[in-house]
Image (cartoon, rainbow, N blue to C red):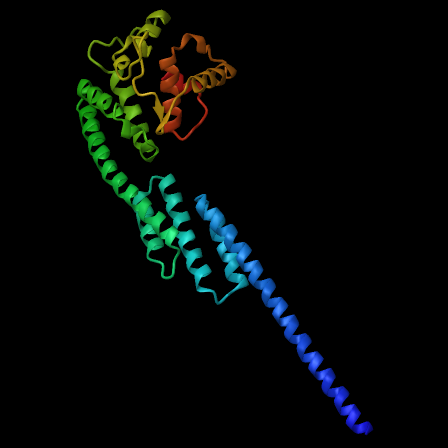
Length: 287
């Protein structure tokens, strides 16, 4: 009887032990699933905001929680490619951006949302690449005219180029900067421009002030002779508050900004933006 009772006790203990292990295993699995779901939600939120660096990190964490999960691994690769594409576009390396976007959309088991975004960006990049080729060709023609001392032609062609609204978009900031430099160079060498009146400061100011040169016709606004027609920088409208801020920045740097017209300030803002800066410097206004 005692042996039988002992057997029953041992059997019961074994059942409770097995049940406890199964319960602990189930609890661990539930926690893992909850953690995975939370991380994937955070990754999705980051991806929705186009913060692909954060999204990639979250997807990588989700993969660590569930190493066998194909979805997290695929999404991570897509986020990585989209992050690289964004980096390349910021550096004007659009051919590399195109390759990264193609890679993102071809990931097997990838996110439909990320694939859709990659396709959308690809359309933009293809358009930008074509426009950049067109702008490059125009700049080469202008450079050739400059090299041949045909400054009037170089100036006029550059003026037409910078009047193109598309040229002010962020995708062409490096090319816009080249155009500004060519414009400044060619305008100083226009026929009839007196570049030897350096002995008289008043004459020098008259000759070098954009208001009194042919560069006044580049842009336009009522009430000024050097008005700016296209009041944008990197595709964004330049507001009155932007002009006031630029004046304050110049004043803080010792520049008598009150002598500069709003058009002078706008051009300075555009030049700073083309150089990748948000702050205007004396060099921008002096040019």
